[in-house]
Length: 163
Length: 211
Image 1 (tube, rainbow over the protein chains, first blue to last red):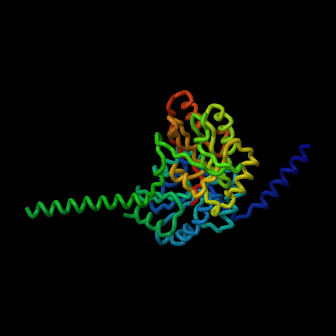
Image 2 (cartoon, one colour):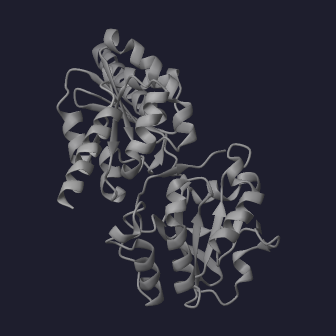
Image 3 (cartoon, rainbow over the protein chains, first blue to last red):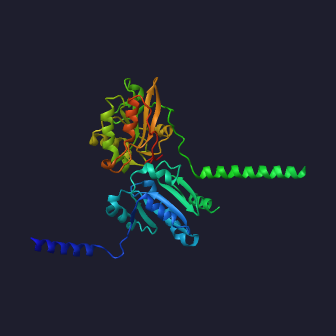
């Protein structure tokens, strides 16, 4: 019996090793405190934080805007962070495949903090909780926009924190 | 004298500049919260139900109030709350606070939210409450709903519908088993006991309502 179990374990290890490609996309699952730490520890870049989810059509529709910004990020000193609100149990079956399939190059995190009433107002006092929503931070200044965003409006937000 | 005028002018200019920048900031931070606040009188409606009939709050002569929930078919947060909405209706309809669900989405943007699919979903889940179409999308903006699900608990006072609670059903949209605060239940329980709800406004992540 033990023998059989050992063989099974061996086969399982072998199998999982084979199915994990070396360049697999890693997406960190964070709680709100950890997200705040990430945002608070970067005073160098203009942080552009987009709250989205794979199931949110208007969020997915505006992703090209952030992909375009990602392309310009190095010369504009910008760090794009896509904070997904997908359910944590769908990380492997839904979020990671989505990110890989769509070739998303920006940093992606999954925020797993269910008690939304506590953390939503800490992101921005004006946020009703609807997504998409975009937060721009730079050197203690912040500006926030709830709703679908285009490149022009995003640039305006960035300008606001640079003033 | 001239110096005074100059100083006054520059003060006026500075003030104008400040007003300008404030207006600019407000424009950037678009506020959608121009809907109802606690204590406001909510509008009644006459909307098409999944059973083919039109429903108004004034049809319910015996109701003491309502749990009006803007929700829809496609949104995972709405789906995650369907069973809880049914439970709310089963518990509070006999106590005078029935649930009325309204789908505010544009069926062209979200075909899964169209009338036929609403009928299917209501049947599948066995909705015990009306599931209405916000035809022309006239009702949700008056309430100020921004997302699904978005709850308004109304108390009937002298045949007017007063807003007593706005927000989430509870504090864990994703997992009912991990809920520690039942916002809507607490608010309705308070109203039934003749008290004011302690928590009157809460926030939750939801799917933005599409025009």
